[in-house]
Image 1 (tube, protein in one colour):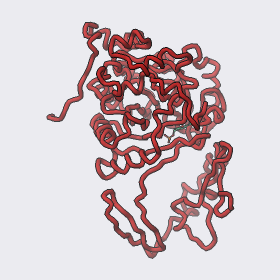
Image 2 (cartoon, rainbow, N blue to C red):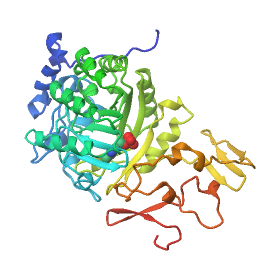
Image 3 (cartoon, rainbow, N blue to C red):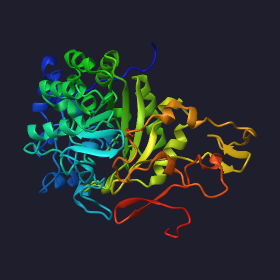
Image 4 (cartoon, protein in one colour):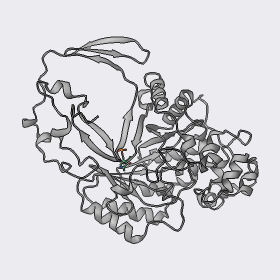
Length: 444
Ligand SMILES: *Cc1c(COP(=O)(O)O)cnc(C)c1O
C-alpha cells in the first residue's frame, strides 16, 4: 500500500484530552460546541458568524469536537466550517423559500412516516443529530430536544407499516437514527424485522462523519442481526474523509452493511467538479458508493447555499466517463410540493429516428447507432412476473399512482418502441399539487 493515507486531526485545545475520552462518543456528544465562547477556543469568528450566533430563533447549533477539529481555523470559507457554523446569510429570507418544501407533512399517514413512493417509506425516528447542518432539509422539526417522537407515535408508525403490505423498504432517518439510545434503536429494528413484508431496512446517518467513534464493534454486532440492512452516510467534501471515518466505514462494511453516500450540492463548498471528483474517488476507496447528489432544498436559512441546477448537471458531466462508473452519483432535485426526487443529467442522446440513433460520448465524440430491424418483444401474457397481481397499483402517492398500463400515453400509430423514453408522460405543478398531464392537451 503506497497510496496517500487518510489523516486524522485534533484542534490544539483538545490535544490534552485523553484518548479514552476523545474516542468515546458520549464524550463527543456532551462536549459539543455551540456558543460564541466555544467557537472562539478553536477559531476566530467572522462578524457574519457572530451576528448569526447572536440572533434569535436560530436553527440549533452543535458541533462535535471531532468534526470541529477538521476545520482549518485560518480559513473563513473552510468547507467544513461553512456546513456547520451559521453565517448572517442564514437569517435572510429568499424567494421560493418554504416551511415544508417537500410537502412531507402532507404525505404523512401518521406522525413521522412519509409515504410518497409505492413500495417504500421514510420513517423519521428522532429529531436529534450529532451535529447540525446549516442547510438541513428538516430544520422545521429537527434539533428541538423537547420535541422528539413519543412512544405512542412510534407504535402508530409500526401499526401503519404492519397493515401496509406494499411497503417492502423502510428508510430510517430523522434526525439521525444512530444518535438514538442503543436499546431503543435495537427495539425499533426488532419490531421492523417482525413485519414479514418489510424486505430491506436502510438507515440514513451522518453519525459516522460527525462522530465516527460511535461506530463501535457493539453497534456493528447489533446492526448485523437485522440484515439485509443498508446505510447511507452523508459526506459533502473530501476534507471530511479521515482515518477515523475510513475505519468506521470499514467496520460497517465488514459487518455486511452496504454503504452509500448522499451529498448536497452547496455553493462555495462543493460546487466544483474537482472537489466532487476527489470526493467520489475517496469515497470508493473506503468502499462507499456515491448514491445521490442533491440539489439544495428550498428551506429557510439555506438560500445562500443554493446553486443553479446547471451546476449539478455540469458536475455529473465531469464525472461520468472521467472516473469509475460506480463512483458517479445520480444528481436529483427533490421537487418542491412533494413531487419526489427527479434525476437530472447531461444528455447523451443527440437525436433519435425510427432506426438510427445519434449519441455523443463523455468527450463530445458523436456516433450513430443502428436499431435492430426485427425486435421480438417480451410477451407479458406468458410472463409470470407480469401476471403477478401487483399490490402497488392504485396505491396512494402524489400522482394517485398510475398503473403501468397508464404510465405511457400512446399516441395513435406509435408502437411500443417509441414510448420507452417515457417522454409522453408529463407532470405539471399546479398550486403545489402534482398531476399527470396528457400530451397535446393544450395545458402547458
Ligand atoms: C428519498 C426518499 C425515499 C427513498 O428514495 P430512493 O430513491 O428509493 O432512495 C423514500 N421516501 C421519501 C419520502 C424520500 O424522500
